[in-house]
Figure 1 (cartoon, rainbow, N blue to C red):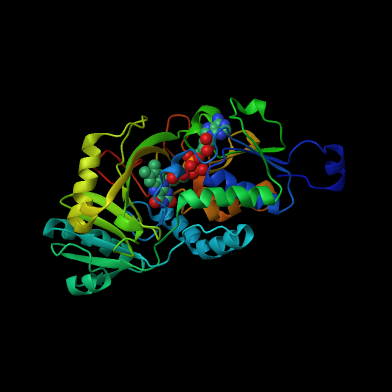
Figure 2: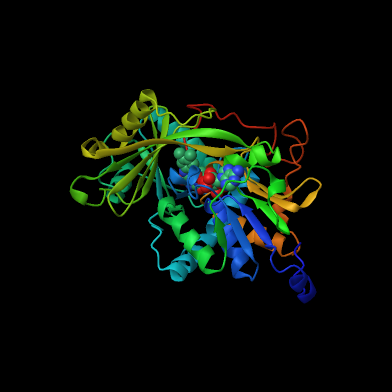
Length: 392
Ligand SMILES: Cc1cc2nc3c(=O)[nH]c(=O)nc-3n(C[C@H](O)[C@H](O)[C@H](O)COP(=O)(O)OP(=O)(O)OC[C@H]3O[C@@H](n4cnc5c(N)ncnc54)[C@H](O)[C@@H]3O)c2cc1C
């Protein structure tokens, strides 16, 4: 896509090869990968890292989030998660920054008999796909995490579902991109015609809709941060995803004592924190892990996931605009999908043969009137994502 011949370079020295709109995890990782491959890169963002990543939990959970009807999306999540160990190592080596990458795995648990029955349906589906999900007896569960409530009826281990801290990841990506030569312009882009580059990559999260007309919508998520008393590490090591009296929550322990407890999924575009959501999250969290009641509640915040009609990202050229690539719509999965998105988009910028993984992710798949064509969901169009339907 970009002509890097000597004549092209000498005739056009000042113009960037790539302008990336948006300095969230997706835009910064793309900028890093492109700059590291010798391209002149400029990143535009008035408030780098201020989007969904600023509140995200950072679970890398392709297995626990393998849902019915999302087979192709699951394959993409697995492919990206497989790149995470090398990506994390390279990022830490390049920047010297810790990013909170942890590999203890994820425990999925059910509090009541009904919760366990619901969870088991999903685990059976995930096992049917050949994914590593190991059911555990209650005694095995408590051997792994003694802090779980005695009421928890059962669970399963997803050992390959890991975590990273997005609040450490994004600054590290920014450092890596800048060290590779990318320049940051601290301004928002109002319209694409204001950007002068051979290729423009729109990685603006929810901001992509106004710039491109793509069907990216905000999906609100409220999330809490707690802190273990006296600065000690939380009393559990795995990411815990639980069904608790019908509520779906997750608990993500950080080494510095923080616990992330989330999150609502709401079809709204405000970032107000509501008492009802805080109550539901805390009740479910404390029911699963009673010691949380003694933790400090240090933050209650909401962010906006960039959702698409089929829950999968949009990666590739805008219809009729081969010089403008979309890299947006990562919804609940932008952190886990960061490595693969960066590699696939950098390959496209450099004019490589498009990876077959990109075919179902193209920007024209929704047509003019919304979701249509070979979308990622296996059938039936968009999945409902109403508050309470799924917590993520
Ligand atoms: C509560 C919650 C929990 C989550 N948990 C997880 C999780 O556990 N695992 C996971 O993989 N994902 C999770 N996510 C999803 C993840 O945060 C997003 O998918 C991811 O942040 C998307 O990255 P992005 O860079 O595309 O967008 P964002 O992180 O939203 O960043 C977009 C950037 O673009 C900039 N921008 C916007 N408009 C413009 C413009 N016009 N010009 C210039 N810049 C612009 C913004 O300032 C921002 O810096 C969660 C999200 C939420 C809300």
